[in-house]
Image (cartoon, rainbow, N blue to C red; front, top):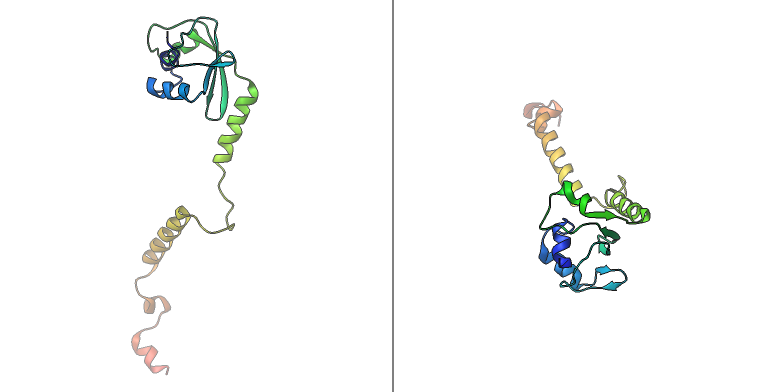
Length: 145
């Protein structure tokens, strides 16, 4: 089976054309040599794939006839990726979830919207008129002068 079709059939890439593009960009190799999309995959081959800044290594156990379900993938490949690579992936995901500390720098667009919504809802809920809020009427304010 062609390597682009194989990577698509084991659900490593969503479409076959994406798999072919990644192969063309030399992000997929068998052994230590870069391959073309037409390269045939055999049982026992070790495929190295660079995806999401991580180097995955998979060993081909069996060639599927066509695209398979996610539960059947472990029957066809064995993941031999280094644990360090998965730690890097976890570290990157954690760093993306980082949100700036309050009071540090300018507010983001999201912060600004949240503040505007809070102030708008707070003002309209508490009072409708400034004079009513301060307990003054128009007549009282004129007599004080």
